[in-house]
Length: 131
Image (cartoon, rainbow, N blue to C red; front, side):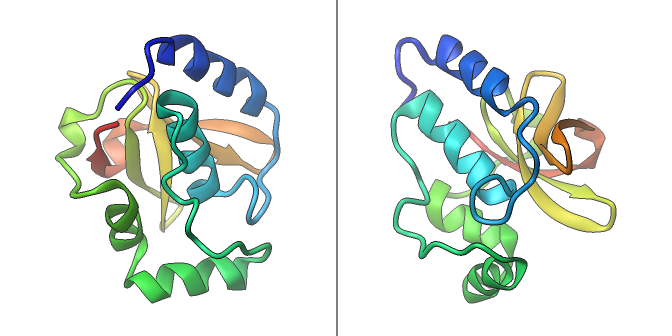
């Protein structure tokens, strides 16, 4: 599923998102993870999700699926143990009492933050999806 040059594409993705602030519908945890998967595989797993631009819209999409884990599973397949997450895999983490999606960089989970990409510890990981 990964493109031959996925490592360079993943690096380019990280550089492009490093200082990009959080924004509902364009750089929130779901769109961030989907964009990373697209960079690695050439396929946006959330292409069929109705667009939103507010927190209410994002929460509606999540509620329609059941929860964030179910939404991710609907687009990425069944999750695996977070212990199996490797570079470029999508990871579900708990951050400040809220679930969010991020991308494993091999050591941490990278996710969109208020002022740019943030690193979260893998100890906060709940599940992962192999890409």
